[in-house]
Length: 383
Image 1 (tube, rainbow, N blue to C red):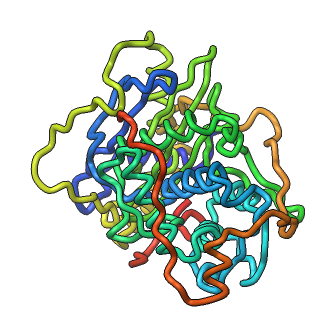
Image 2 (cartoon, one colour; image 1 turned 120 degrees about the horizontal axis):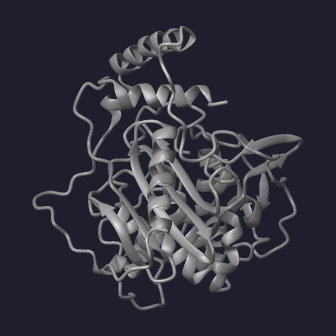
């Protein structure tokens, strides 16, 4: 049975509901083993990352663990400022403590903004100090179209990236930290008896899907970094600016399927991609296309009309590339508060002891070759 939201996706694709022409949706698909790009569309166009920002947050965390600064059992403390962020969130009271391990699982699956900010504060002492690390790591990796302001991805005009930069980041996560790949393939969490399914609908529905992260805000649209492995070959597809969850998922599944159908080639590596655009590279804002009152009203009207047409046998819904329904129970990973036995980050301890500046993060590795806006559905804001 096709989900109700698939009907809405088909409707949006088939009708003109926008206040302005739709912007092209940048995308890229590449082979993780070789970093060679199979195909791409506007890879350098700057875009608001929404919760794909949490991939950068996670990368900085892995680097901090690698450096011995913290461990997976180190504490993450929920601050008052973090607890006041809009959804998606866990809603833990200020002062609550959980392990860094559980915090990472939560931001990958639930995409909780309160936990993401608390990770930054607990490791670097403040949101701004952790964002400085994010920017330093971006520069080191060669992500030339990215700038970070926060750890969660709630909209900020100063926080942007591109699918080419996200490809560099996701590639680095897979290559540098293969031992932590399981964080990106969790199908759902179980907390106090409550199930929290992953927003990544390809997991357990698309053959071989094993990661990584979704994101959504009205200005960003629906974003997805999706990986899949078949016959020992791992591909990564990144799509931004989707107009619905399903449109985003379908685009990623289509890219992955075409990639698997192609033979490993000799295309350019991610680092070898060449810019073709000229002029200012301004991030695209999709708010009017997705979340204006006019668009919402037109969408609701057309949806009712389409439902009536389906019931009357006058409309046929397209089948998704990936399965719309799970064929087995979702595999859930338990999480809970408490249990933090590892060392607290020195920056966090210093910040609590005295009001002193936090040192700027200075990555030790050489560069390789290579204000909150109105959100959409509250449960989906910055997925």
